[in-house]
Image (cartoon, rainbow, N blue to C red; front, side, top):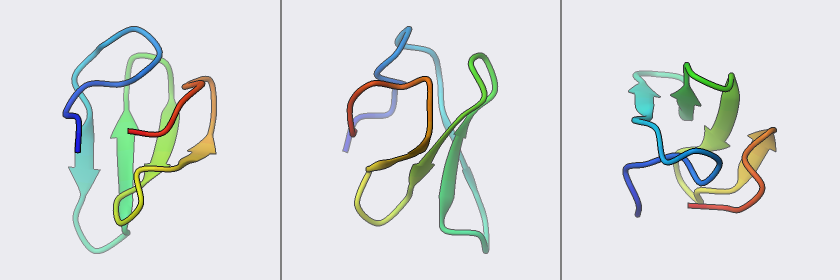
Length: 46
C-alpha cells in the first residue's frame, strides 16, 4: 500500500484503533484495510 496520499502525494497517517488513514493536508480519510477513499478529496484508492 502506498504511504502517500493520492491527491497531492502528502504523507498520510494511520489512526490506531480506528481503521482509518488520515491525510492532514487535504483532510482525506481512507480505509486502512482496503485503501479505499472514505471521504475525499483523494481521487483514487491507495
